[in-house]
Amino acid sequence: MCFPGVEGQGGFGICIEGNIASGKTTCLEYFSKTSNLEVLTEPVSKWRNIQGHNPLALMYQDPVRWGLTLQTYVQLTMLDRHLSTMSAPVRMMERSIYSAKYIFVENLYRSGKMPEVDFAVLSEWFDWITSNIDIPVDLIVYLQTTPQTCYERLTQRCREEEKVIPLEYLETIHQLYEDWLINQMSFKVPAPVLVIPANHDLQKMLHQYEEHRGKILMGSK
Ligand SMILES: Nc1ncnc2c1ncn2[C@@H]1O[C@H](COP(=O)(O)OP(=O)(O)O)[C@@H](O)[C@H]1O
Ligand SMILES: O=c1ccn([C@H]2C[C@H](O)[C@@H](COP(=O)(O)O)O2)c(=O)[nH]1
Image 1 (cartoon, rainbow, N blue to C red):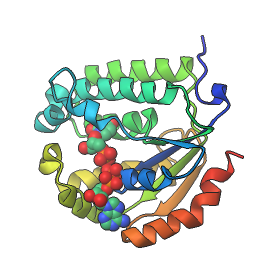
Image 2: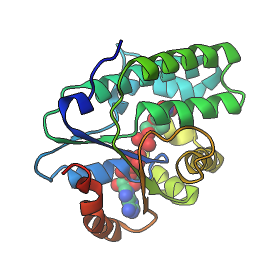
Image 3: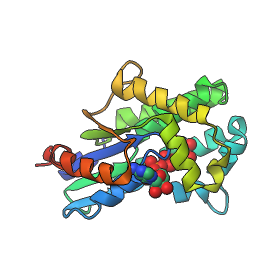
Image 4: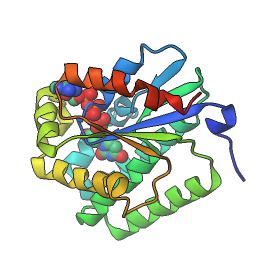
């Protein structure tokens, strides 16, 4: 069984990856003004409110109890994003079903905050999805930051659920991203990776996005 995704629709799919508060949404906002390009942000509002419940907040309060709940829903909503019908020939989306598994589920498990049975259930779901469904990713853009920069931006953004996040959490997420996308020694990387240094101020970042516009969108031509 194989279901067609964006590739089946003849489109070009770009995933913007990076640590929490690295600037992914800001990057997407910038590119959203480009014609013939659609932007899909992470479905965070769904993770904060499913039928009146807030699995994101619950996970930060008690990851052992709620990690599986959140990550099951993240996996579903990311799959839904990947498979949704394209409204333009190029799609730029925030994160992916891959980073949900390789970064966030992996972190919960390795840190002892996800019971082995929960990890096994999520892993079997993930393996089934990725071997039976075509998840279309043509390019990964990695916004590479230091954990300290993300900590400052996260503090400034002040999302209620994330007030409990310490710098050490961002350091761990950072290392998982580096091992996956830079050192390429942890998990299979599903597409070529373009690394953009992202510690700079907003003006310099927008300048860099303009410089990289060709490289990012080139593959779509
Ligand atoms: N280059 C930058 N310099 C300073 N602040 C930034 C920069 N990019 C984004 N921000 C701010 O940092 C916070 C997190 O950015 P955001 O784009 O929401 O990150 P992400 O989507 O990766 O979590 C927001 O308050 C945003 O306005
Ligand atoms: O699989 C996932 C993906 C994201 N999260 C958390 C991390 C953040 O608190 C929010 C959204 O991330 P941003 O980087 O600000 O977009 O969701 C998670 O726990 N699991």
